[in-house]
Amino acid sequence: MPSLKDIKKRIGSVKNTQQITKAMKMVAAAKLRRAQEAAVAARPYAEKMQAVLSNLAKREEADAHPLLSKRGTGRALVVLMTADRGLCGGFNANVSKAAERFIHANEQGFDELDLMIIGRKGRDFLKNRLGDKIIKVYENITADASYKTAALIGQEIIDNYTSEKYDAVYVVYNAFQSAIVQNVTLEQVLPIQPAEAAAEDESVIDYLYEPNRGQVLAEILPKMVEVQIFRALVESNASEQGARMSSMDSASRNASEMISKLTLQYNRARQAAITKELMEIISGSESIK
Image 1 (tube, rainbow, N blue to C red):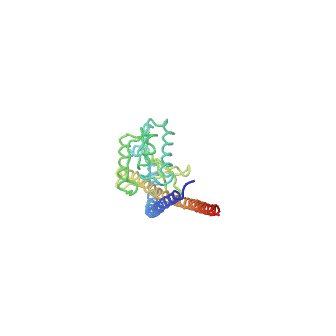
Image 2 (image 1 turned 90 degrees about the vertical axis):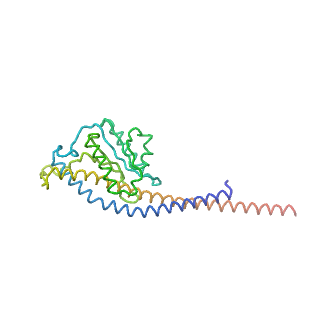
Image 3 (image 1 turned 30 degrees about the horizontal axis):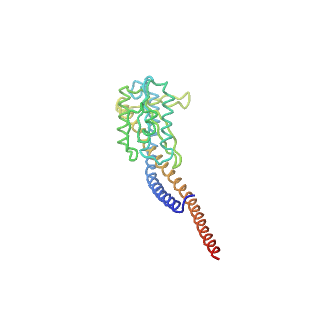
């Protein structure tokens, strides 16, 4: 049985840990509000733009722009978005496992699959599993994700696709639903996919381009990729903060339960020690008589 000193030391250690988890929960809650606002604000524009360009892709020929062209199944790029820090439950593991499953499931469909990782934890998780497929890792950009950062990543993806280095590009990230629910999401970024017809007799209506079709497509199609990357970044950031807040709240409650159990154990051990001392005193007194 542990001594009173050991139990008291352990109670102090758990209390110190609880203070840290409570502080981390408060920090995550403050960051979550800003991240959630950014994610919610990015959705309407991204969804509407995706709907318009999906309809446009259905009406335009594949040779109208390189980002609309569908090629073979040679090489594909998977962009995985994780966090740079841990202590956020299964946030990093869930999305990393989803990317791993997708790659294994499509290894026969593509000649080669490469992995671009945003976030240090994704690299740490997959370096021993898919280390040979990791071509690039971005670190320390998820916490303060900006459109400028998303545009740079998006432009790199576009350059790789237009140069025919890759024939398809996918992004895997956690979409924010609530502080305790994050949905692992897989989306195809390139080539831009045509919208599915709502009905078989849906009529195809041509858009009017101003100043001309080529200039409009050259402007808005790359923007579509940038917006998708930006939306994934802000969704992933909001999901990370929500997962960390939930995880730290659970850790704080577990610490409270442990402190209660250790306190009870301490009181019982202290009572047993006092009883033992009283028995020794009484036995000594009786022996003198």
